[in-house]
Structure formats: C-alpha cells, structure tokens
Image (cartoon, rainbow, N blue to C red):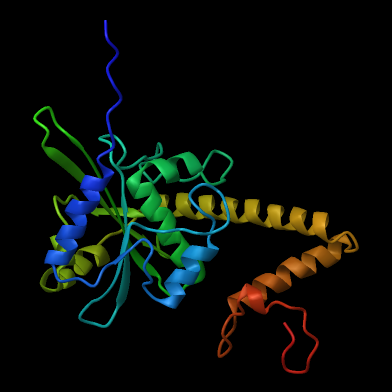
Length: 268
C-alpha cells in the first residue's frame, strides 16, 4: 500500500487569484514588503509577531479605504494554501487566538488565514489611531480535477468588540471592496451587534489578558531593575501606562520617548 502524499500548498495560486481581483477593482493595495503608511507600518513592526518574536508582522496584502463619510478603514489580508486553514474558532465561536492562560496562541495565529489577519488587526488597535479594521483570510486547495477552490473569511475587528473580531458575511470574492460597493459593505459592518452576554464575556477575557500583561511587565521590571522597591515598580508601571495613553490636548508618548528625561517641559 502506498502512502498518500501530503497535499501541496496552493498559497501562491491564492495570492495570484486575490491580488488579481484587487488589481481589477482598481484598488491601491500594497503587498507584504510594501509600505501602506508610516503609522500602520510602525504598528505592525512594533507588535509581537505571529511566531511570538519581536515585530516584523507582514500581511500578504493591505489597503486603506475611505467611506462616503470620510471614515478610514485599514483592510488586512492573509493567505494560506490548504483546505482546512481558513479559520480556527473557540468554543464560543470567536477567533481562537488566545490560550487557556490568556496568552497568544501562536500556533493558530500562524496557521490559519483569518486568525493571522485578526492578529495584524489587533496590532493596529494597539498602536494606531484606527479603531475599525477589516481582517480578511483567504485559503484554498485544488480539487481532483486540478481546479483551484477558494474560501474567504471576512471579519470586523474594533475597539467595540475588544479586538475579538466579528464575521461580517459570507463572500465568494472581494468585490465588496470596490469603490461603488464599499459604502454598502460598511453599512453592513455598522449593523453588526453583540449581545450583552457576549460583550461581558469579551470584556472579562480582555481584562484577564491585561492582567497577564501587567504581571509580565512587573516581572520584567523586577528582573531588570533590581534597585526598585515593590511600590516603585507599581509607580513605574502606572506612569508608563499613563504616559502612553495621553490626555486631553496632549498626545500619547511613544515608547522611544520614555527616556526618564528631567529637562524642564520634557519630562516623561
């Protein structure tokens, strides 16, 4: 008996198909190595990578679209090349990008198209002024006749859904991104809703994620700043959060600006 050979990835075919659509729609899309704008580029670079390393996130394609009201919507697209690699959901039907310990699930983020796109979208929620992002995953396979079969997942990632992502609808192509179709698509996005139970569950999950991050930050400070007392570490963490949040009329500081300067009017 011969072993069935492992299916070959059709990701290059998927990329060729979808990039061809984007070009035919007349969209100013950028591929993974290209710049979209400095704010988005920096966010993708500063956010932790799909493999857990430092930065270097590169969506396969990205676009910045504007609706009739002037609203800006980054669109981040991730390709995969296997039949079962579109999306991985948890038991509540949400994108499964966190482990039971509320830490990033790098396996899912790296393996599934939609999960990867939602990961990129969260980079923008964390580090840019954009609050509404469209995350798209596309994958596929070749059937017994050698025909390319594709599947698409389209999700809305926002501050309102705590970055968890909500499926918008079922699509067979990306023509909803065309200029003539985009406003209707955005109206569908705005009509999405979550039940109070879902919101409470997502809020609780996000609070647990924040606690995990704060514990890690405290431990890192303890390890690297031996001279600080416990209360000093608390002040340092709180001050860092306040500085990077900003205030009315004062823009938030970038982490590169946190230099502990004592210069008048330039303290951080």
